[in-house]
Length: 275
Image (cartoon, one colour):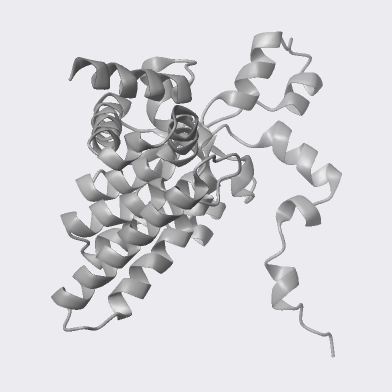
């Protein structure tokens, strides 16, 4: 009796199992799919793989379906993130080097928390990345600009989907405004960042934010600390947030190639000087 294929083999990536002749056939014969619609209500890994040639999400790129709307809302969230930092007196007790380090390393997870708090949802469309092999086989010219576009246009589907999964979890948890504020403090004052001069002070600020969140959760939920532990567990997912993915998806369409770290610091200190 023929043995059945193991589940592990049946789920193996086609990039590992397909023969070169088969890959070449697909490249030369399949129709181009310019875009695939993505919506959280219909998203499922198996469904998405069946709609594209390669199931490796890390190789697939997406852009916003309505950038003119979503980028505007994202900009508003980023400004609110800067305002949150600016309104923390304890932040300005740190040396400027520590301030810059905290902003540069923590703005991305703070921004995603802001998306969650403001309820910013967004739809995606998958973009068709030109194949280098196909250009060679069809004797098409490949300019230097083509090479740059192939590597930089669009954000990684895998990274964006991690972010959307995080947003869904937070929306399902019904986080209130005070909880968001405490969580942002926990994220901003990260004592684990290398290079901090006042690490102990940053650690103290983070512990104060955690303690305040714990007291608030205990008061609101009849001394049940299960919610406190659950929310802190959600924050662990923010470690996977990729700042470059956020910049590519939400800000490159309106700002182009800009250094967001420098822009954030300029905006932060410019607003402070106006006070």
